[in-house]
Image 1: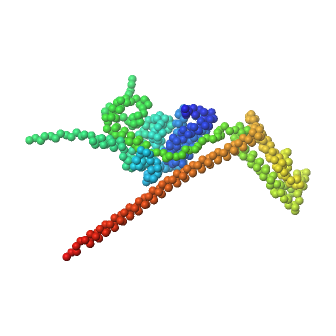
Image 2 (image 1 turned 120 degrees about the horizontal axis):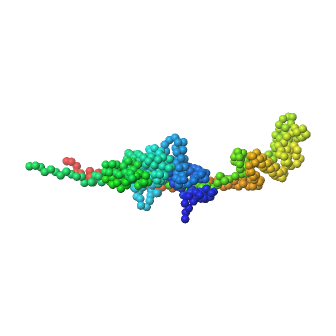
Image 3 (image 1 turned 90 degrees about the horizontal axis):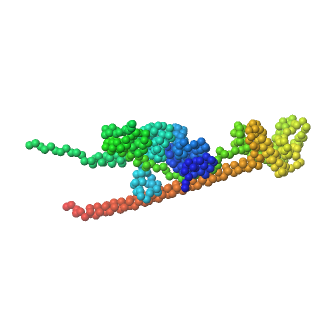
Length: 214
Length: 293
């Protein structure tokens, strides 16, 4: 049975490097994903990821378990991402949507997904990436932590150091901005479209014709 | 008394409540009557539209995938936090910790090099002289060392003075002499280490023995070399994998371009043939038309 994070952390604090390396293996992918989504560059995200674990290793002796280990890691990674963004003094370099390479896509085509669906998904993914770049840093962090890292409102609030209500407001506003950006780029909202469709097909009460008076 | 917030038909929830509803995450602090909230959302067109559109955005967000990448190949291989040398305490220790082993190694190497180079340093009435090489200039007779100490040679207490061919010009330098010099240098380094510890206030830091210190130092160097090799190997593997992937992609792309080109050519041929057929038909038709009277 695999050890829990808490067990591995305890062993790491007592000097067991293998335990820490198990934590690295377990969390490198989520941390990389977080860094990539915040920064938008693969190489830099890898650097941030590596630096996150190095810093965690150096200061794990001071980790008292007040928060989850993953939250602690996320906090380190986010701080590093912010440092990087400030250092670069520019918004994250999201790639603008461009032509889709069908050959590249074909190589990653799943067994149940048609090429059209795959193109569509990749295309929308790029539009989402571009739309995310228009968000403020706070809104982007809240949405990434909620949507992609699956944190609770409270965990996000603790991590970002803001009230719970602020997290919810950032999410609401961020999602609203994203909807506007996606619609601007022609991405139809499936739910809204369905709703409109339902409204359009809803039987409308037609006033009964008034019989003409002779 | 309960102060739960009820939602009537004409009272819409605020943004935060809608977000909680959207993610179905209530922590109990909202003080909401969830049943009335659900009823409201189902019956209120405005709220239903907002929730539907935000839900749609959430669905779209899942299309943004992080590019597949190889594992980081990042592992902690050495815990520098626990490493300690004989100079474990004090400001001197902090200053000397990284530099001391390197300095010791440098002194050893320098000593050996000087010995091999047959360095000759002299200071007399003509000034300061430094000479290297095994062959002596016959024109310049060796200076005799006077009791007033006008000639100086770099020497360490208790070290056989192999550095001065002036004193040992008839005696060839042997391997034993060099080893003796190396040992003497080591002894000097240890002595200076002990002096540093003594200056450190005698805090009880025990001096490591020569062999232990050297062994630890050599072990550390070996570890660094090993780590470097492992890293280089991993980098090489990564590069090879990346290169291979790129090559495959390029090959596939080229194949597709070639096939596309061939397809276009075939299409063009068919188009030309069709044009020719049409032309022939037109000519035949025109020939079949009776000439006007």
